[in-house]
Image: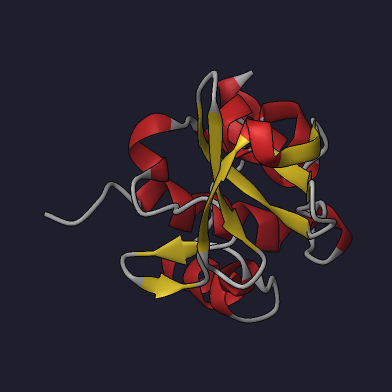
Length: 146
């Protein structure tokens, strides 16, 4: 129910996103922050307040399939973890844990696991209901650069 979503203060939400919530340690907004999780620069244009609230409480429930965590083992025994960026019949491209773009041929892999569980912890474990409302306000304000 959209009417049940409390939306707080944008400025407080940004401070929480960059600080206490530690969101920027994985997510990027307008060129600032990490690349290991999805870029949220335009999230306010593509997600509703209700979906953002659900995502903050249960990240796995709203994760887009393309952003799923990947674990690959190459035939030579190398382990690679990251976030899927693209995949086709023959290859998979991912952003590894060190923010490096990695392209792998599936024929060079011993194993490829794609998880449906988000590595993002629920924001509700770190932030109060009021703080979550502030983060929702901040995320809704992100419509991309003009």
